[in-house]
Length: 142
Image (cartoon, rainbow, N blue to C red; front, top):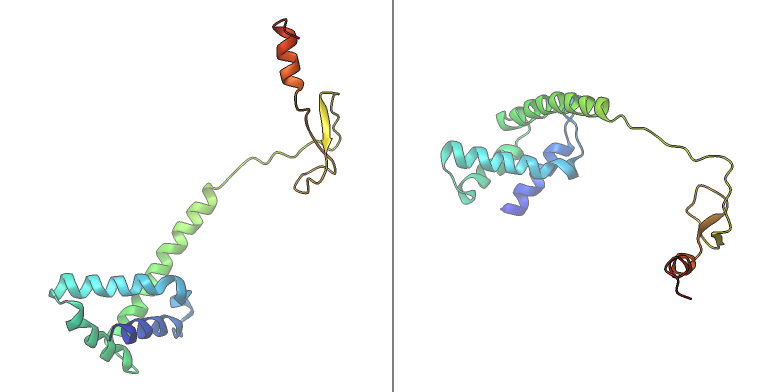
């Protein structure tokens, strides 16, 4: 019964005719199942063995109150979701730093081969051991 329930919930989302109620069924069918579970359990105190057959029966019909309620809920959710997305997009302002076109490196740096993910054609890194030599010289050790 549970497999049929899950399949019909998915199909109900997939078969929405109204553009305002259409969503990606793969990402929203879990929320639909959860909403139906909460509604039947909290409103009526039913367990899954009792309300799964009711849902299966209602979703199997061509036109039904449950299908109409799901469509109405999807439309209301979409409006709220679009407002949230718009607000989020307006907040996402960031500063973009672009590297200088021409760069130069001192003798403290060496070219590193086989670096492909770099904004420059050549990649330079501080020479290994240079900082150790500097520390030794600074502390008087040789």
